[in-house]
Picture 1 (cartoon, helix red, strand yellow):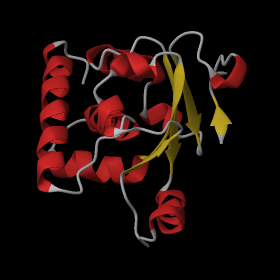
Picture 2 (cartoon, one colour):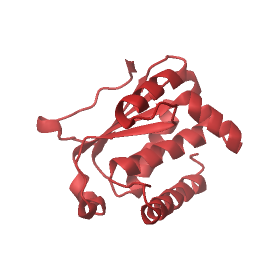
Picture 3 (cartoon, helix red, strand yellow):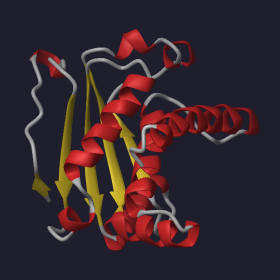
Picture 4 (cartoon, helix red, strand yellow):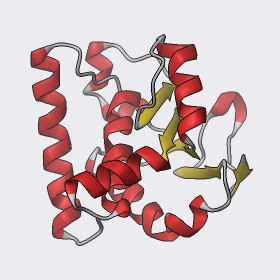
Length: 173
């Protein structure tokens, strides 16, 4: 995978300032996904989540790669849109204390560009908008949110909706 930016980590993985790194499994994804525009969106999402100084790596991969990862880590042998790999342990209490995440590397987001393209087409939205939503969804997973139970699903969808409406209002999706 091609790395587009080095993450500045201090001792013990402490983030000195908000860092995003983008990795492209296939160089063609760089033509489909505009890194500068996506950086603004991710920055706005982090701001909306009251995260001032964190690190996250975003990997853009193919159907084959995401299927392999989904099988390996979730025991599900099919393509999915996005996977989240947290680097911090999240307790229920910590999930709502955003200051506890300052200066930490949150984890990795692995996003399947081909699946995002299919979903964007089905929903009649741009690829950028779909990728923005998937990154928001995955960031919430990195922060300990889940959609395994109805109550958790409703809470996560509420967060997604509130933050995504702000992005739409600013015309960043």
